Length: 258
Image (tube, rainbow, N blue to C red; front, side, top):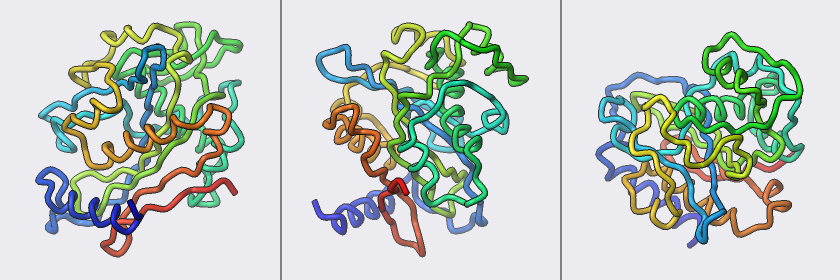
């Protein structure tokens, strides 16, 4: 499929979607930084990802299946951990961002994805602690009290998407991916979350595409499917797709490490 045809199809999907159509009465809302974590379990014959359903009470994307994630909190940038992110991942994160965005803020995006995943699912993307990291944030405090520190070294950055204008919520979301072998606990330990995501379960990518997904999540699932075709060592250097609207038109470009 050509990029032009892909963009046209996405534009048509958004236009026809009752849940994601623009509300022209809404004022401009600046997108808020958010982060999502896609955990891939490759210990089964077919790779599976963890997804859950948003409550019908949510104002943004109610009843949709999504990956765990949420807003970035200032505490995420303040948390100091010894684990370092890969150079290629940091360069991709830096692409098309403000020059004033510090390495701590960039790491904070990834740490937010880990924190939100722990809160929503109970899964701990971490390894035994080598330092005494501390945080005043209750979720981070509970995470660190397990005797672990966030595992950043094998975290992959796979996509970025900004919610179109004229929506009741707007997010500038970074999508990260990690292998289930990086979990401190078992992939089955998904009943210890906050309950914010309903019907949490592991599902193959093929079956995930049949769920009631937000349009961008549908695209990210296909992105993950393509990315997993590459060996681990090469995956981190792959271009990162960036989805957004500019001047009323849907655009997909690639973030490339500078």
